Amino acid sequence: MTGISEFSRRGLLGGVAALGVVGSVQAQSANFGIPSLAAGNAAQDSAFWAKVSALYEVDRSMTNLENGYWGIMAKPVLEDYLNQTNRVNRENTAYARTTFGADADRVVAELARVAGVDKNEVALTRGATEALQNLIANYNRLQPGDSALYADLDYDSMQYAMEWLKGRRGVNVVKIAMPEPATRQAILDTYAKALAETPKLKLMLLTHVSHRTGIVMPVKEIAAMAKEKGVDIILDAAHSWGQLDFAIADLGVDFIGFNLHKWVGAPIGLGYLYIRKGRLDAIDRHYGDEDWDVNDIRSRVHTGTTNFAATLALPTALKLHEAIGVPAKAARLRYLRDLWVAKARAMPNVEILTPDEPGMSAGINSFRVKGKGSKDDNNALVVALRDKHKVLTVRRSGVAKGQCIRVSPALYTTEAEIERFVAALAIETAKA
Ligand SMILES: Cc1ncc(COP(=O)(O)O)c(C=O)c1O
Image (tube, rainbow, N blue to C red; front, side, top):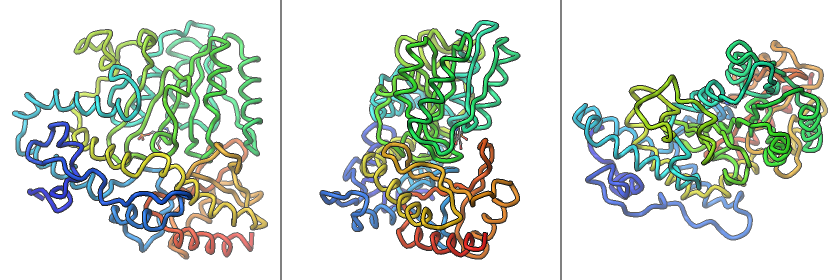
């Protein structure tokens, strides 16, 4: 692709153009052709969601309910990304050595605006992994003999990084298990107990939305309890920003790792870290970075050569994210979750792993066939759903109470696709 396509001509790259990143493209319509949301029930406005769904080019021969892995780019984002890739390839190092730095700076300013934080509180990374590893590894407030804590539901590579602190910092590393059923109160009680009983606890890893079960942690309440005890939290927000409607400042957490290629739908290879103003000194410069001043958050990430085009396409992804609207996204994903969960709860052999309590789940949810928590049991069901019914889900391990199957719809998912999954689930679990 060499030219600016129909999407781009219609102004769908407006965000980038407005930033001056794409010189020749003029900012025009910024709403991507999405109609206004009808007043009332945002999640079920069929005209609105049909238009949003049509922004994604999806192979519907398989009902894809495995969107927790990453979120595909909508067509306007993909087009921008391809155009940016062509442009960077064409303009070569002459571009990278001259204007990219200023362009990237404007992209980060735009990200900070959408995130509602200061520009010097965020730095781009290649994903949540890089963001969180940098925060965990470079957190410098731990002394030998202190404790650091994480939970069974946390992401594997973050668990590894927490365990690695044992050798690196000489700390005692504690792993706790999340309760089942995972009610808000049971989770708060679990953290209250851990905070009370773990000697010299200084650091906790917490995951906002679990990639295993989909549980949404009551972060604000846990952070308040932790703060009272002088315990810092590093929050894994890989699945929350873009899927849930929240303000970063309201969480009360000073260190957060985010993803942009899951629920924001940016090109793969983008995430960011957040360090609250005034806390930069608790995180060391990454491998002694000297490119940036010690007071500049960019010194906390040192990626090397990055995917320039992905960075340049981020404003279009953010613009679409805003055009659909965060409350509408959150409501739609929760509605799609409720649609299948309500029916699955009535199936005699199915256990749902997140509660219906407001605020405790988002679009991602997991289930288990009662008494079937093994890898083989869950693999067999994933394969049956995929091969017999053409519905894609994924097995998740690492839950203390047994393995499970994760179901994660996307904004392009239709109600009919959810029904297809429900029908398949009823058939496959009836004989369990
Ligand atoms: C909870 C959680 N944390 C961190 C990550 C890592 O994100 P990435 O692979 O984009 O770096 C993931 C990815 O699936 C995740 O689910």
